[in-house]
Length: 263
Image (cartoon, rainbow, N blue to C red; front, side, top):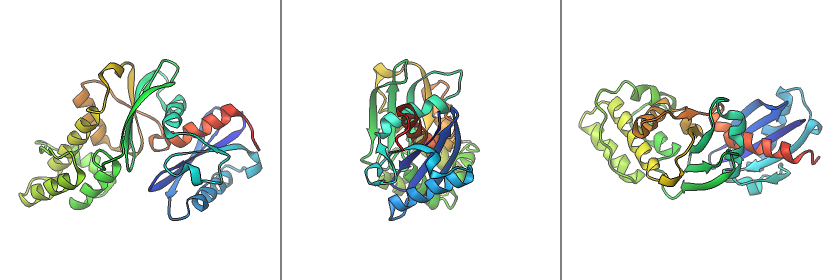
């Protein structure tokens, strides 16, 4: 099979994945910065170094994501929708067959519908508003004086989730500030935030496209509180991909491997 690298250029972070021997060998993430391609090159070199490879051992590099067109380090690029669909071939639990991917990124959220061969049938996307994205969670975490990695566990301690009704991140932010002023427990506010996010994203779902298992990807999938909210609102199991934050990069590397060596 050889070795292939996928680069997922997000608006905030650039993710990289090394695929070889039919598995995910390594992943890395770095702040995108102002030099996207420079960051991509550094990640590529570091992945090789950590795995005792040289750049000549890499059969191909495929880019996806927001900044894919400016990553000159890559040999080619592919849409992030297609990359995510491919990624789950290596990241989905072996015993499950996803028919839907819920991808919660830093700046957008996506629902991708798949057929039995993991080919994309359709998708819905929210990229016009930060509500329902990782950025929204970061903003609320700052207001509540906690960190993004504590948001999920804290929310699970809630005994009375707050109602957060605003669908715009600016208004939701004001709503949360008002709840803080009224001395509501931040655990209840965080739980209410996750429920609000889950309901907003679920509204994007097409009723005719709900077959198969549901898989969460993206950085948002690492939030146990948001995962729980989806399961409770949908009243069914929702599975989390392995390496969820890197699913797009993994898919890009897998596509590169199927195309074969280009170097």
